[in-house]
Length: 193
Image 1 (tube, rainbow, N blue to C red):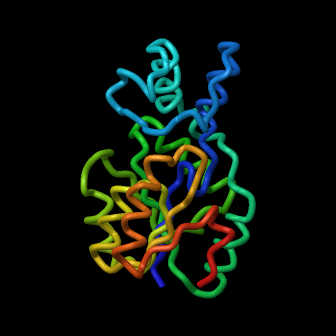
Image 2: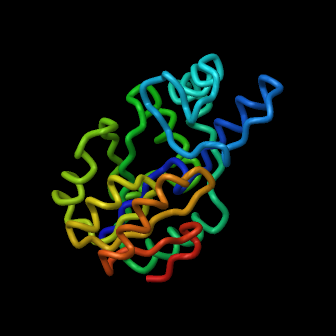
């Protein structure tokens, strides 16, 4: 089986809201984010100075290359690889953090663990195009737009129900009513093939 795994808030915990809040002595939490807005104007109504610092972390190779893997995720991927499945990473991370990201993946999984690692432009259909080109059978992601498009293609989908996906749940719940190829899970470790 050809399996795609997303990185942020799917395989690795992106704790940027909590981290920036702590740095500034504020009380914002990841759970406060109901919707990400990528135009740097605001995230969920947070102050602009806070949002600017959050987005600066997405450009920081040191931060983006030193995240913690979710509990149970590594063990599950090692199991699937040993069973002969092809594992792909496809992420919309920015070009300036791709080297640190690959180093992080190699550190945690070893060089050559993933069949291929792809970085695509955010807010495009690049992920979906790759899913088709790579004959992907299963997608694990937290991005509701990509998940919905994957369902439409008939790809088996596991929607990660992380702490900031209040808005994601609206789309995922809609997909659950329409498609029989999607399941909502709390983490990769919960998935049984």
